[in-house]
Image 1 (spheres, rainbow, N blue to C red):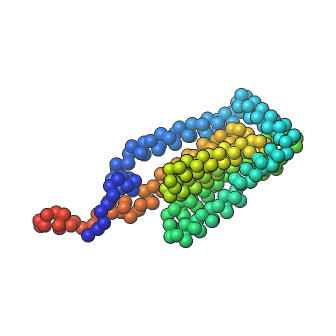
Image 2: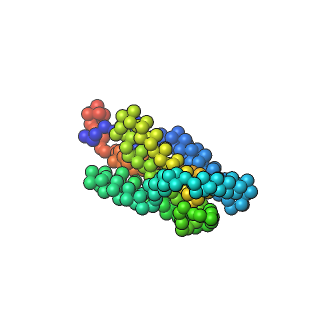
Image 3: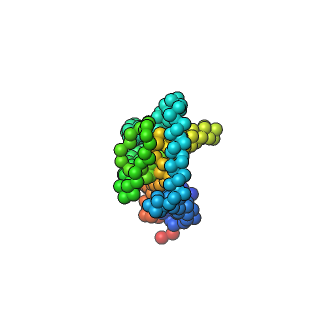
Length: 250
């Protein structure tokens, strides 16, 4: 006799086709998040004057302020370094090894694929758009590569999003609020630091946030039914009928 199936679980709802409302909401959310990304992409490619003016104005104002505030620059460097590619690579390896040690294979795969895939996506988009980075007379950092979208901003959304998805189920309501607040502050801080250090324009950062949220949502939606794959198999291919459940009739 097989174990009873939880028909309220995400995997069962997907397998039986009852997850359509959640799917509609997901694709609607993805569509909304894609609007600012593609909107900014179009305006950047078109070299729209108002956007260029706003980007350059923010760059110049923050750079001028930073030249006279070494403590501010040091804090911005710390935030930027905390969201670097190396930092996320170390994070990914540590988390994946821990999950593998706990025999949580699917969570480990989700973590690696989501974070590594985000990096590859960002590189591909940067190659296609090939926007030059901000130019200042006394740069705080020297960054290689293209500018749109911000890799630090995209990685922050994806990385902290993955961290929240892993941690929140194990936390109390109060600690969930604290952890979410810290994650939001860090994501915004990393994005702001990239503009303050003249490594990116504001539009690069916003586009990175949007693309990161879309990628995280896409990977999460793919992972939801896979996380409970055994339940999906049980629903799609149920075991032999139970004679007692059928009343003993042949």
